[in-house]
Amino acid sequence: MKQAIFLVTSLAGIKKLTFKQKITMLRNDDIQITVVLGMVQFDEYEAAKQLIQTMVGAGRVIVMSLAELVRDKPGIAVAEKDQFTADYRDLDVKRFSAGDNTDDVILRYVAEGDIVAEEVVDADGRLITATKISQNQPVAAAVYEDDKQIGLLHYTDGKHDESLLLNGAGELVYRFIRHDHHVTYDYEMQRTSKMAFTNLISETDEKTDQVSYRLSEERPYYEVVDHVDFHRFNSIFEFYAEFISTEFADVPASLFIDLNDNPHFAAYLQQLLIFNY
Image (cartoon, rainbow, N blue to C red; front, top):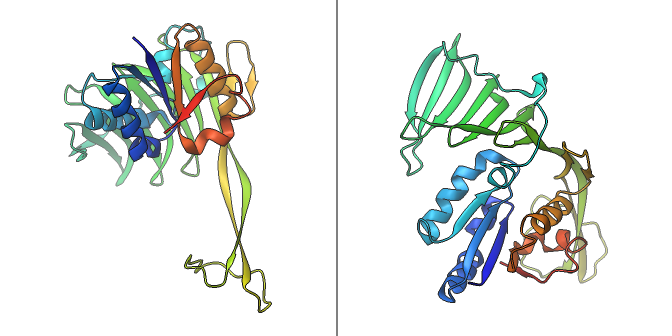
């Protein structure tokens, strides 16, 4: 049977109409489909699986997370400073329905009037995520699959800044480190353009038909450290390219990637025929 691999790097990618259309088209052609969840915020895996199940039906495509793909890989012991310890279990706990069309339950642990930890468990009581909270912001989190810890998330000032991917033995395999860089966009258009830039100031005062607007923002990017051989990937897309090429080297399959990711992959997948969704 012919095969197709879809690499998903965000929840937004799954929600794209073209994602569903391509999967439907391939399934109608009797092509086996594997969706690889490549998000480095591992707490998005559960939502991603639910979205795909709702979209195409349970069991109609194979869904694999990065955690499943590294389950049998070698790793190193997680440093004590990186470990997640559930030292809040003796505190007062409040139960809430997750309210996301699932039977998941949210457990909030309270101390001195503040929420200090939050856990999400499924209908069978199995942990999905556990998060420590300080001053109403996440500090650290652990993510679970089948009752096993598969990833750790670290936060600074409430912002995600690092992910640790673990193998089946709970050992560290890959570390994803978030950085921010400054990006500037220049927009050139006619003064009669209908595009509204209500929060931007024109860069030109001349009475011409052409007008320029400039928008700046901080955008994240990730570097990746392999903790087995300590190879460093300066771009997460370099990591994705090598990971997919290695894991599926013996699988004759077409590779589908998010159109938004295409420019980032161009330098690393020059020898492969890739398709967009």
